[in-house]
Image 1: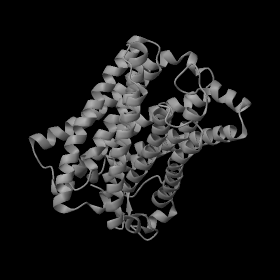
Image 2 (image 1 turned 90 degrees about the horizontal axis):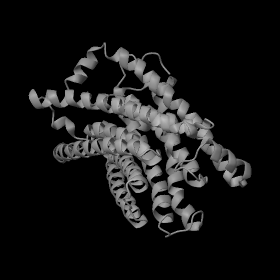
Image 3 (image 1 turned 135 degrees about the vertical axis):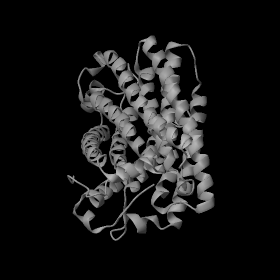
Image 4 (image 1 turned 135 degrees about the horizontal axis):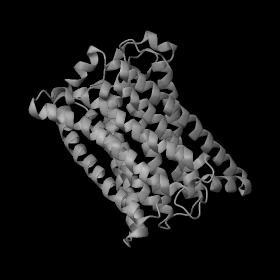
Length: 402
């Protein structure tokens, strides 16, 4: 990683860490849905060890791949996180930072709480997979997790309050330059906080912790939805008038990860309501919910791909001779999120409702797109990292993203 970006740094580089963290989640799906974990909703070290010892060769391969993927991309996530935190400290001393705070791009700073929330989720996954007997003390960790996510959520809200306080009092929001979905980044950050706050609702055996988890998560789910609606309306209005900003075109697919994260948060809260508060949702209702989420995601993914194709985005920003844009990392999150949602749709939707058999032909046929998306995002992450942080980055021209 370069010690300095020579004036080319943007807070959007935090999305590089978010993408790596998302890939950790895609590998955790192998263990989550392919490894038996009786007694708790998620697989833990002991479940993985038992499955590896007594399982078939395909099971052992899946476990090795899953654990290796979690380890590699977990390391990459934290490396990018700490690098970004150091770069941001330097960036705050520059004139470019002052200009950022006076523009639409101020919302780029919401990538910081987004990444911090992802970091806590990644830490929990690493703990489940690699730390023996963690489940014995997990109830002590949930209050701490709620406190940490709440602090990150307050940080995200404080950044959002500064932005809205400026533009609603003094004005200055450039509607013409808002021709993308870049303003959805705050909603993404709030939704990531929500899914973290919802985790104890699905995992804790303490009704009080579950209740607090559901209430706090609900607040951030609703906050994310409100911000999303506002950003979508403003973004569509500007794009219909001025077209989509080429360097910010990947943001057209930011709805995809927002829907995945909010969907998982809702599933977690429903589980807590079912176990502790006698609120029972039928498996068919879960299937419909996941189908609705996946439908919205596909629509926005197609919309984004259509615009990217029309603008020759790959040639302009991803080819060896193209320009660099930190906003290119926004392409990773939709692919990762769609991969994760397909796993949930197949396992929590189709299999749970009895529509298909687990590990049958239909199962693997529907799971294959998730694996293809995961592989494509791995290639994209390493390609972008080499392009932006490798030796080749000195020859390309940086392009700011609004």
